[in-house]
Amino acid sequence: MKAVRRSGEGIEVVEVAPPTGAGVRVRVRSSGICGSDLHLLRSDFPMAHTLGHEIAGHTPDGTAVAVEPVTPCGACPPCRKGDYNLCELGSEMVLGVAADGGMAEELLVPERCLVPLPAGVSPAEACLVEPLAVAIHGLRRARLRGDQRAVVIGAGSIGLCAVAGVAAAGAEVAAVARHDAQREAAARLGAREIEGSYDLAIDASGTRSGLARGLELCRPGGTLLLVGSYWDGFELSGMELCLKEINVVPASMYGRDGAARDIDVAASTLALHPGIADAIITHRYPLEAAEEAFRTAADRSAGAIKVVLEP
Image (tube, rainbow, N blue to C red; front, side):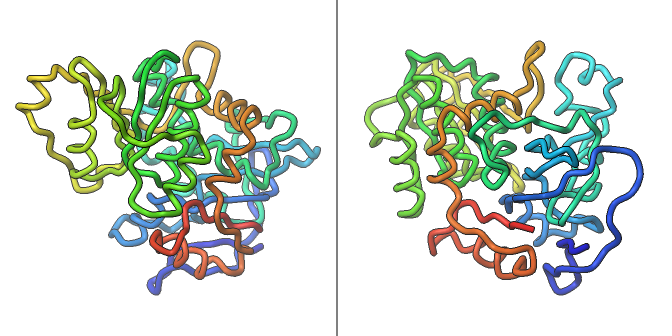
C-alpha cells in the first residue's frame, strides 16, 4: 500500500507492506497535516515511520471512526488518573511519530484509539476531531464558562478549533489572526473584533509575540491558556504577569475527565457544529500528491489552513 514518510529529500510517497498484527484495521479516509508535522520535518527528530496523527476512516464493519493517536501504557500514575496525555512513555506513544500514523491507505490501532463518529459527521472531515480535542482539553483545563469573554491569539487550525470550542460553549470569543484567510475563517466560526480585555486569553501561536499579546489582552485576575507548541521556548513579562495576577494554564494533547474523553467531546462538537469543518479545511489532496500538499500547508500566506490528504 502507499504511505507518506520522510526521506533525505523531504516528503515522499512509498510502497510499504499492509500492517499486520494485533489491533483494529482502519481504512483511512482523511489525514490532516499538522503544524507539528511541518516542524518535525525541519528538525533532526528521527522519523522512520508513516506520518500523520489526525486520522479518520472506517473499520472493517463499516463503522465511521476518528482515531485518538496515542497508545499510553495505562499503568503509570498519570494514566491511572485519566491524564494519559502525560503518560510516562512520552512521545513514544504517539502514532505518526514513534509508530506508523494515518498518512497511508490503512493502519492498525488498539481498540481504545477508536472514536465512533456521531451521525452526520463524515470521515472526510473527522480528521479535525484530533486538533479539536486539543482545544477542548485546553478549555477544560482553563475552566471556561459560558458567561466569560475569551480571545484567541493565532488562527491556525488549533487556534480556529479554540474559537469554535469557545463559541460552542456559549462564551463570547474574539481572535487575533495573521492572514486574511484565517481572519475570515475565525469570523465564520463566531469570532468578533478585539475590544477591551478578556477573562481568558488563549495563545495558539506558539510564539513569544503571541504570549505577549495574550498577557496584554488578559484582564487582571484572568487566565492565560497555552495551547500552542513552543518549540523554541518562551518568555513572559514577569512584571505584567504578577501585577495582573494572571493564572497561566498549560495544556498538552487530550485526556479524560471522569468517563468522558476530550476526543469524544470533540467528535460531538463537530456533529453539533458542522460549519467548523467548512471553515477550517481549505485544501484536499490525494495521497499521491503528499509532497505538493505539504508545500501548500507550509504557505499560510496563500490561504492554507488545514490541508487534508485523502488516501
